Image 1: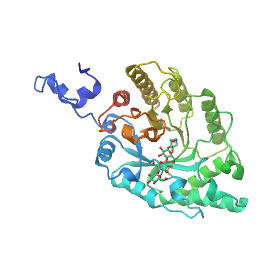
Image 2: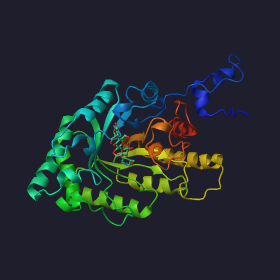
Image 3: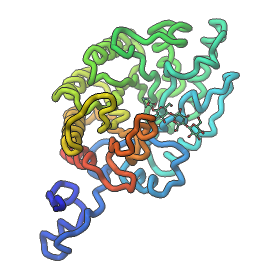
Image 4: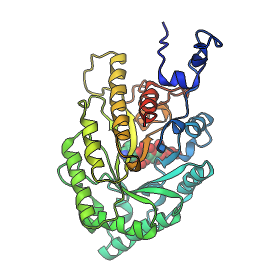
Length: 355
Ligand code: G3I
């Protein structure tokens, strides 16, 4: 028996609302849902890549529902930095042009990441290492100055278990915290306007990692680093204890900076865990956690709601569906493969529209 709950999305934009007046079929199909960007009092972001730009279904979802765009990988070193440390902006330009041509805010992602750049910077003397590090950041940020509203300047600086900062070629070459401060300083000099973010994941899931991250934010701010925003990715574990998401966002909001929910997805996969729950029970858990996140984000002062960004338009666009552990059934996003809203659309739309 179909579920004819009068949820917000049904009332907002479908024949069901008309059915109440007796002028529409009694059992209408699920109609189109309201554009998220019209419901939300803040930017609603999505990631994507140039290979999707000619996919009509993808464009329809993105251009209908979203107001901000994060290049999923093509503004990173893996797409821009050549082995000789020359720069190729072909793919990054395509992403910037897509955002500009379609009236989307552009969020740059990501300048410095522990997982990229090691090969091109291997074996350099310190002077060359430092000069080319600065040059990379300066040339990339300058190129998109006036087009980006923000940048993830440093991505995933905190150790996996939250015990201090990660060690990698950037920290070994330029110092644990000095390479971070340097990146923000060079980015700020290249672009006085864009909001400069520190971005990381599992901050809500591992309180120790969240505490280390916020301790780093505090240290950078006290040192005068031009850190302008806090990015928390929220690749959610749907079994996170209730209230943990809210607790982290409340503490992160305490700095008074713009906060970016930067990469939301909520996998239904259980992976190695024995999961005796039904698909419906898992989906209810997923919806409850995403609702908590969206409501906690909306509890921030309006000036601190930088953007609410999901990491993919449709379930099948998700990086999680490209993972070898994918079971072909995961539904971590707000729209399914056909572009039809999933229960997570309801969760997000309901919370964002309440703002
Ligand atoms: O599309 C090209 C294909 O044309 C080419 O033949 C192939 C050869 O390597 O590469 C393909 O691009 C891949 C791209 O994903 C699209 O599938 C890149 O190699 C691959 O590196 C890229 O992976 C991205 C990953 O970050 C590394 O950049 C994922 O899409 C992206 O979802 C993931 O996103 C990260 C965030 O940046 C940081 N937070 C975690 C998040 C998930 O890992």
